[in-house]
Image 1 (spheres, rainbow, N blue to C red):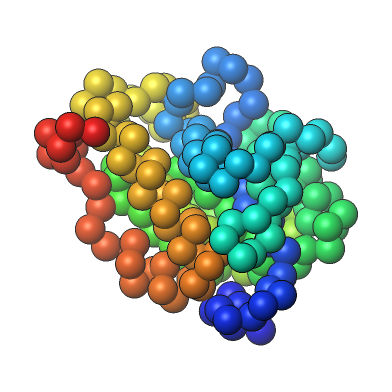
Image 2: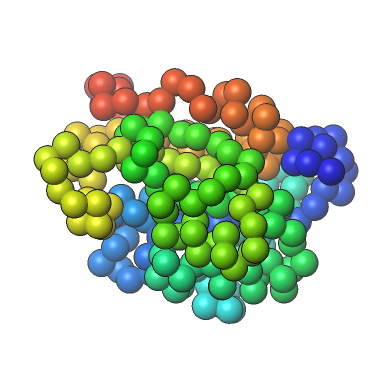
Length: 211
C-alpha cells in the first residue's frame, strides 16, 4: 500500500520523520541544518519530546493528528546520517517507504519546497548516506530550497554558513510552510502534498509581510 492509501485508514502505520543536519551547536543556524529546524518546529507544535537517545540519534514518539510517528535527528555528521536512521527504522520495524526525510537542497531556489516519493541523492551527502544504509532510494523526501551562492562562494562554505539578513527575514515563513508540507504528506499522502506545496514558493519579496 502506498502513502496515499493511508488516508482513511484508522490504524495507519508508524512513520519515521527525519530532519537532516550536523549535530554540533556551531552548525545550528546554518543552511545545511534546515532539516533539523523544520523537525524541531514539528516537534514543538505537536508536543513530541525529541530527547531519547539511541543508535547515535535523538528521537521521540508521538502523534500527528491521527497518525503515529517517530521524529528523529541523527547525531552523526551529515555524511554518516544513514546508519543511525536505518538502526532506528529496524528497531521500530518501519520500512523505508514509510520514512520521510526533510533536508536542504541547493538545486532548489531559496524558499521553494519539493516533495518526492523516491529518487537519487542529487549530490547531497546526507541523502547519499541514507540511500546506502537503507539499500534503496524509495523513501519520501521534503526538499527545502536554499539556493546557490550568488557571490561565487564554494558549496561547502555556503551550506555551512548562516542565512543572510534578507533570507532570515522570511525564514520563519519557509519553516512554517515546510512544517505544513510534512504534515500534509503524513496525513493526506504525497500526491496531495505535491499538488499543494511543489508550487508557489516563499520568496525574499515576502519579507514585507510582517512575519
